[in-house]
Image 1 (spheres, one colour):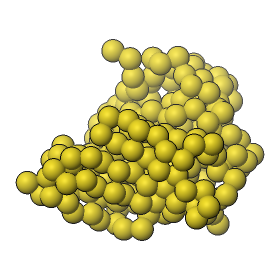
Image 2 (cartoon, rainbow over the protein chains, first blue to last red):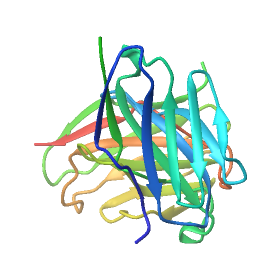
Image 3 (cartoon, helix red, strand yellow):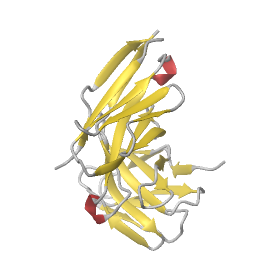
Image 4 (cartoon, rainbow over the protein chains, first blue to last red):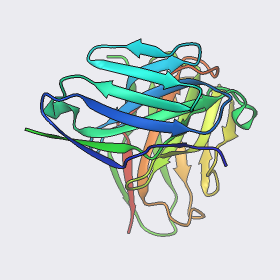
Length: 116
Length: 113
């Protein structure tokens, strides 16, 4: 079946460096993508989203890039801090997922560790 | 404070017992969702509801049941028919069923003894 996946299960970066977390999706009909951050034992927190009519969207210290040609999504975190340590999930909404719009398909996640 | 609350945070049950997990939101969201998360895994959709008194099965609905009698509440019952119920359960809500961003509660960790 179609799914959202991530290239790397773990990523370790030095504090202050930039982090790039990647995500591949297989459903070309998906038109909405979200990045979530999940700290240990907590629910996922919304970070940033992007619609398929955009290539790039910036937030505070975060940037999401969407390459529809190769069906690739990435999350860039600038000046990574210890508080950024968490698991990051990408999620997509296929237009006709199960006949009901709005449902998200999640990837397995990438665990980001920030070394002081 | 606006948000989504789940209770309890930790729940233990014996095999063969049904247990109900609470999810409440005061965001005035129409849609609510239940997910299951296993260690090192992504989220899998159990049930969702886009409007009061209506709900639909997700990918892994077997052994679970829900109700949506009020807009702000979407309780999940884990029945004895669920073969492997130990997991982290997450509730979410969104503004509408049409690709609104989902916001999550803090989760309930269920352990079957």
